[in-house]
Image 1 (cartoon, rainbow, N blue to C red):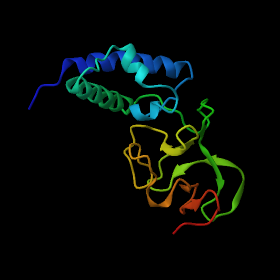
Image 2: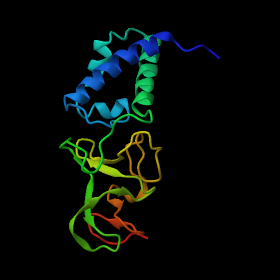
Image 3: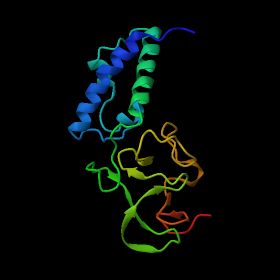
Image 4: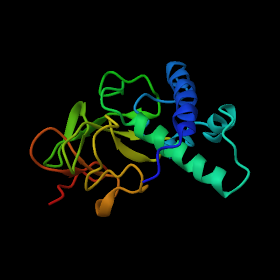
Length: 175
């Protein structure tokens, strides 16, 4: 097995410092969980350029891929700050639902939970997709961070408080 390339950690350190600064400034939401998602908020390749990651040949492109993977791994480190219901200032996130598990409209917003695993979740308007609030939570049946998809039920299969699942658009219970 080949020892890890020390440049990967060096570049990832630089990029994480920049990402953390952008999170502090409100440019990127806390809880962004992979390098690819960063492109919805800004040109994430600028992080690579600012860190001076080379991009001249195939070996450099392999290095870029390794750096992106390391940044994604670090973004998902347990214990990183993330936003959640009533603790999110990022305007493109919605951590609420108004549909009960039996399809009834609720008088007030309640926290949104993933219909696949029950973890707190949110809709990200910039990603046009749902995400678990905590980026360290593993992908589940419905929320797959890297696949760009929500499983076979689509983005409206969510769980409100209670035992059932409801489609947040139609309010119909999903078996």
